[in-house]
Length: 225
Image 1 (cartoon, rainbow, N blue to C red):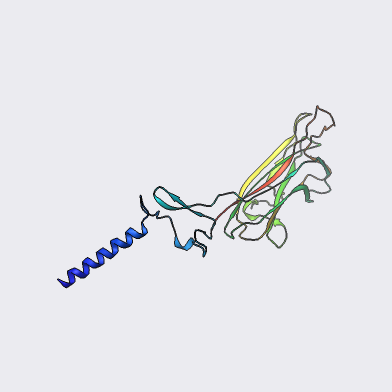
Image 2: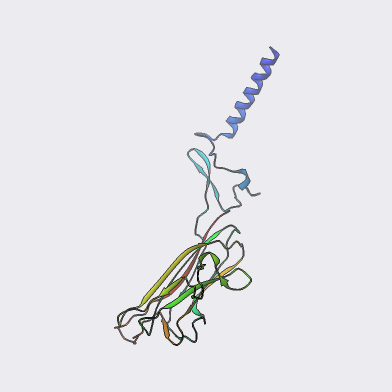
């Protein structure tokens, strides 16, 4: 008899505990992880928030891509190549971002508009990254079978037509692996002796029969706790 009373007592205590922690109208969302909680009530280390729903409490994920940086090259640029492997920084096309987590990824995308003075020649464009020890190529997007070829992310071809401008676009997900500032910049080159242009066509003239368009680079953090 005594053992039955003890078991009944445990059962009642368990029911009372469940009643106390269960919000009216439903059950607690199983997505709440105590490891996410900060010392401040209702705050979360990984940027998520706690919200009240009809079924109780649930964790609302942090916004993805909320940390954004971008830069535009608005003016026209003219360059004369002094060597096939001589890379030139593209004015206005460098940008930095500080990830909120060392595990975050960065979506990198850029668009370059331009032209050359020869129909058989294009502009090679590459992107470099600096996580604190200087700019260098990004192995994950650099061709491995390059040999003696120039390795680039895009080649902006000569625009066939007096009033046309070539365009190159590239996008990828980078894993810098740092929680401090990381920088990206664009460089370009062309076959030795040829002239290449950014944001204008070869036959450019300051009149309404010709165009100028901006080039750009954009960074978006994909938050990973």
